[in-house]
Image (cartoon, rainbow over all chains, first blue to last red; front, side, top):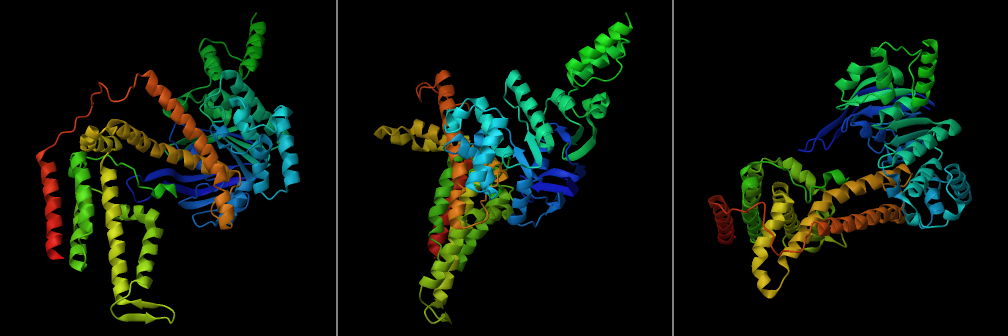
Length: 286
Length: 264
């Protein structure tokens, strides 16, 4: 399933002192089953871009094509609803959306809105709660009694249970400690491998971008300024500094080694790989 | 939907209206509201509309922008207008629909009352757009000082008001976020029967209340650890200073009222 942007412009509060041109002439495509990173400085338009993928915000001009569902200025609510069925969205602090009396019922909310029967919704809810390894004795508890990490898992299960073919993650690890951070990212990578979905990840953590994503798209002041294979873009030091983006630690480290005359056989994408490559180099230069 | 919400918003600026003492603005608005009720014909309403246009110009705001802000009370305006059209009798019969009649007096009263409501909404919006919430509560606190003599906790009430005002935009943002999160989960607010639309609000209100309570508690703790104990010994960072232009603005408003009383 692909998402295609054609000449998309989005202006908030047009003709008022609060007018804000959030997206400017966006032309791009998100291909099927890839893991995308969407990066850019705060206020660059990343959130607006993803919210236009399921009709939460409609383009002021231009067209967003979500696998055949056309979203433009005049799109009707019914059509928008279709796009929401295809695109699952995990917002920042997803645990803030919990509201039901029990964990199970909360996860069932999405599937039931899609028209699933109570039986089916329950089956799906249990399936995804198990996938996220939430202890079974919590299913009938109130979501508000859980710990922060568990609440987040419930919220994520609620979105996965809708079985979207595109999963959008808007800073899913914001406010998590390093251990939970790694856990959550691994969880999403598992989901990506198991469920065969497209993932679009918004994050400021460039190490995650390097490690998990295939391709990145870079936003700045409402423009899409670059897109392509992750490693190529993240390695471009001039480009990254021009847009105030951090270079991933591993890349910075191998760059520093390079300057000292230590050439690794290829560019590592995480620390484990780096260690292997570095040992290799040591052996060959022993 | 929430974007057109002007209530409680403040647009920083340095126009003459922005610079007026908030107390002067508050008194002026109250005077204007009284004056609005003096108007009873085309001339007097015309003068008031002119006055509003002039104030908007002085505040360097666009009238179209202000009118856009009226969308929120649109239903109220339409309802009032039609109530008068159908229920106020007098004058010549314009339309005789059998079981109902529309008479000229009803149409005119309908228009006048609608204009009156619009004027009231615009003048208050004009005040909140040009006065920061902090200034406004400061003004209220100062103006209500005399009530302290009868043991009204003026400072505490003002503090409560400024906290509430401070959190209007925060709660708006929060509501917006939760609406988005729930509608991304397929919740429908815009379609379906009235019953299903009302039911769709439950997933919005529960998380909203949860976060509001949590925020209130954190706020209370934050105030306490910083030693807040109510009014005792507190001074003000911003000092309100009454100037000549403030006196002039109030005199102008009184003159406007007298003019209308004389013209009616």
